[in-house]
Length: 378
Ligand code: PMP
Image 1 (cartoon, rainbow, N blue to C red):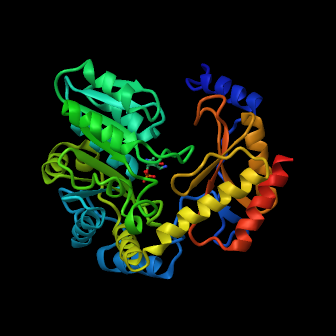
Image 2: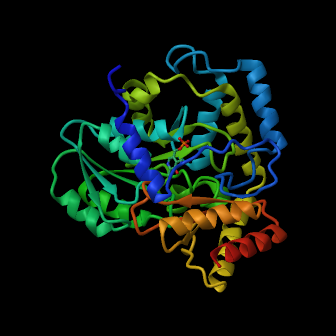
Image 3: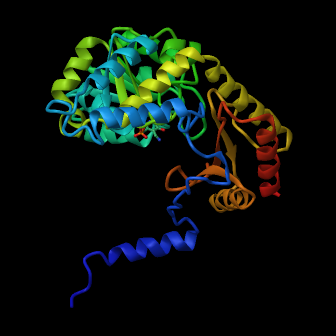
């Protein structure tokens, strides 16, 4: 028999093994004994009884799946309710729910960057925004991280429609984008601003209304935000928030909206319940930020190099990818789950542990996490 057409894969696999950078799936048991600082469940809502009950109720009423794309049978009254309340909560005119934050980002970037347009993209943006740039008809210019001046220069080279795309809180280091500066340079040149608030919603802004709300940009005619329902909201799915004309355009032009099955009713119900719970308990957002600050202060006091957090992500630098992987394995051995970012997820030279400052962590759990991470480093 001829050699397998996939034999070339083995060489890549060998290289990964040699570098000690093989990715493995670790199925999580329902009752894990691990202390979780690895998930994105920032507000500790994923297993909150109100959220899980809302998911179960939505499945009973609307079914296990959406049954079709949003434009055919996949838009339930629950989706419409979620869109109304989400737009209102975050301060935008309209919202459109997608099956994931990834799909929402692909939609926003591709639909707002037609042929002949320019996309200016921050070098630290999430993979889903990068993929949106790759799929869009417009040309992309990648600019230095968190640098409005670099954005101004890039915009100056172009005439015609332009959008600037940036995470609000960068997923690896947890640092915030200079939103006010970005909005300023966008306005000078008439460009639109598309921001991904995946890590801001539920954590930043008054009662967790998000980074655009905190920056006074929510509801502006030239600003579009994307969010995920899978982090602070403890559910699954994503949304684009913006002016009604943009949302109507997405309904008619965004391929990840038109050709994708609608968000599962259980996820929509859970997200709506999380939003309502956050309205009632707005202090959860501030608590997540306070836990992040405490983790940063205590890890720094232990001699670790941690990035000052702007939201609920605390990033701890490791001297090499191998050490980041070993630190994370040692933490797991000691009962602590932490995220580990290393190549190829991040460029060489910036391997890190990524800690989630969950709002529901107790003082004792924070003590334990700091102790375990300090010991793993030794
Ligand atoms: N944007 C950012 C900044 C993210 O971190 C993520 C998820 N890791 C996404 C978008 C994608 O969201 P989802 O998981 O809902 O597809």
